[in-house]
Length: 152
Image (cartoon, rainbow, N blue to C red; front, top):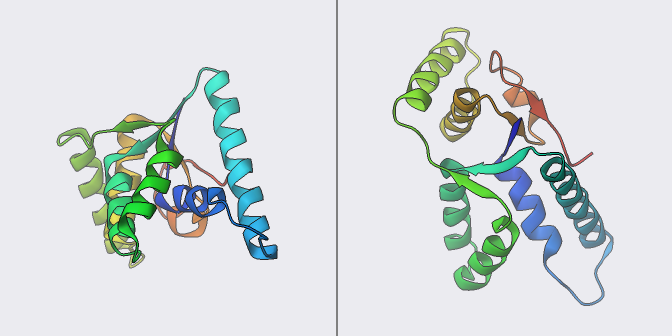
């Protein structure tokens, strides 16, 4: 089984792994959530499963770093958080076909999701992966997509 990490899961890790002196309650909770995600990823990897990122997620993280106000520090924190995980290319044939089908289905039903989320969902479907996200409500609209929330 492959687990594809959604952008919001990686953002939880990046924020939670930043070291702060005298962290407040919110920062301590973010750290606990980041640790839970990493522990779950370690367990899945130890069990022989792949934990990976879509090229789409990596692109979103690059934008987030550039938009942060401290590009170098944010990029460094992001790279440290994602270093244990494979980065999977978005295949122009399989992923694109899934994207077209998913987007058509969601828009036809009047329940579209964001374009980048649709691309990530299509990537997960194309490779038969479970999507790890805490945005399960939105991704539940995608037919056939298996989602898991590792923040709980």
